[in-house]
Length: 348
Image (cartoon, rainbow, N blue to C red; front, side):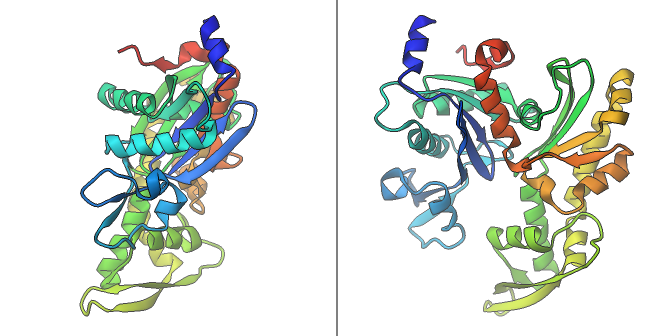
């Protein structure tokens, strides 16, 4: 214990929101210090990262869909879990060194958020990646718990708090009370599925191929879950599927809303199912306390309104929804000795 405290003087303790779309790193006492896309650029057919291991994050995201035949831009996490072990390790190593500094003698203690529905094998992959990336000690925290803490919900009190965390790969829905999760559901429908629904709509309706980044831009600029006070249109550019030539077309917010109906309905149904499993006393608390929404996917216009109509409960967006999970991991670090019994540590 004393040795660990001494090592702590020569390293930086950090909380990592290891997301499908973005990775955020928070440092104890400093808050969020890094927010970059979970993308790595490698030489095709190898796991060798470009630019001496530096083609990670923003640099790599700019290459998505634009790489020549010799380079591949990879997102090593899918549905909130590791799909490419070696690339995730390289990405974590880059982020940890960027925050901790290459000159530090000891690796940092790291708290990493993971979806509540992942398997023991998937957890082990996270532990291994963190250890090989240079972490001295690694702990896991469930994303809905971290999101609730980061959103400032009274999770430790004997009253129900409900969090809906919509990330890139998963949507985490949980009811918390007395410092733990009373009931939760993790569904692999989230922001990425909204992007894919827009890509499918453009193929089906306009015979046009668009990339992930264009789909995300459409979602952010004109996407919505319910009718808007003022509907709008947007010019979209892509490749014609018949002629194979580049072209542009105009799409409306109404048709994008219709395209997003399926993932929005799946998220709303997950919230309803979680409420149906809640204990009566917890359900009674939620009539007053309502639902808090976090994660980048919750920023889709009018999504809280759709959830509110489906459940009949008041629904609000957390302050800075994108950083809730990372802030939660950071708050755990600040109260580490008091709260570490809630964390899962690698014992293999």
